[in-house]
Length: 280
Image 1 (tube, rainbow, N blue to C red):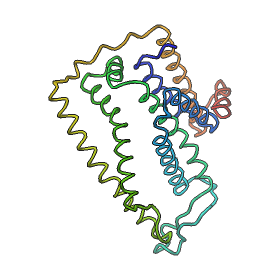
Image 2 (tube, helix red, strand yellow):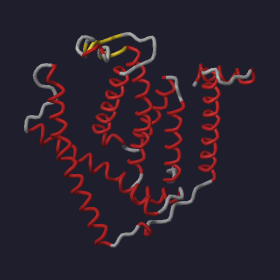
Image 3 (cartoon, rainbow, N blue to C red):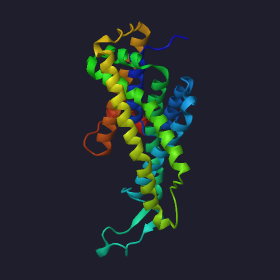
Image 4 (cartoon, helix red, strand yellow):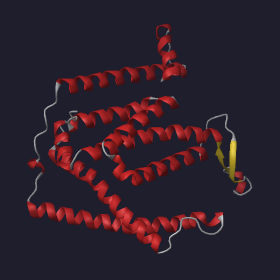
């Protein structure tokens, strides 16, 4: 099976990210995230499955928790009371709660994050730095920017290795995330985060200095990148089809939002409103 050119793979990943923003139904977002997971697995993503699972779980947890805590739409059902209204002076804010509807909304939003992350991880597992750079040049990105972007992408596996080393070292030193009573969990989490982030940032800065010195010593220039591979007619047709489909979906979403807000509606677009509400 012929592999896509780097610029085609990047363009399709970008179109998938835009599609994740335009879709609303949880089933559609779950299907998109599932397709992105298959794309990641087919590219050999199991080699870094632990890091990917940790990032997905952390992003989902943050999104679900924040949406559940700050959900403002009505109606909403209090699921957990974190702080009662008597804790804050003058009753402002009126307590801190986790709302059931916020949990559901956060899960739906996390599917967008998961789909985009898995598509990006699939790209990283398939293409080397020089291929990514040539693909970016094929998308008419200036050579210095393409070089910096491709190099930054290849730093992700390096940072993952550094993070694993720091994690192992801190765990051997007795680092814990939750210690003592639940009231002390935020402080223990802050200490654990500091123990992980400080050495990780220092290692990243050191590694970036080493890479910069190596590039300067070898006289490597962004202009030395190999020319981008030619794009076939089939890939161009897929590009065009995806762009047209996204434009139509975007226009349908705009018309539906205007109708729901009472700004503009027309009987000609009733079928558009129906399709967007029930299938998108």
